[in-house]
Amino acid sequence: MAIHYPRRTSNTKRKRRYGFRARMKSSNGRKLINRKRRVGRSVNVKGT
Image 1 (cartoon, rainbow, N blue to C red):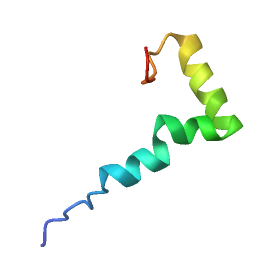
Image 2 (image 1 turned 180 degrees about the vertical axis):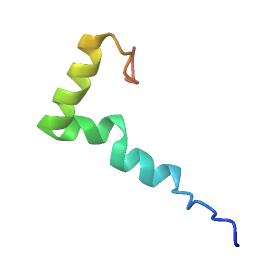
Image 3 (image 1 turned 60 degrees about the horizontal axis):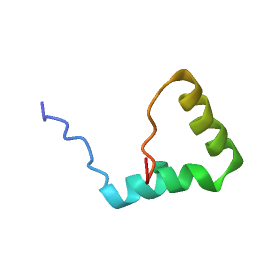
Image 4 (image 1 turned 90 degrees about the horizontal axis):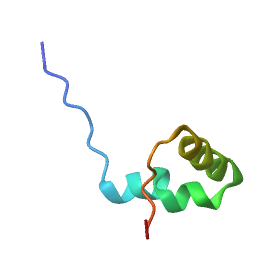
């Protein structure tokens, strides 16, 4: 049997899809970030 090698997504694509700027673009993304902040999670934000 062959070993399955997981595909490696590039960091650029990952940041563009799931990064902070991508979350801030949509209203639902902003809600998600605020939800995580309320729980006490530190969100990766430039300037903090």
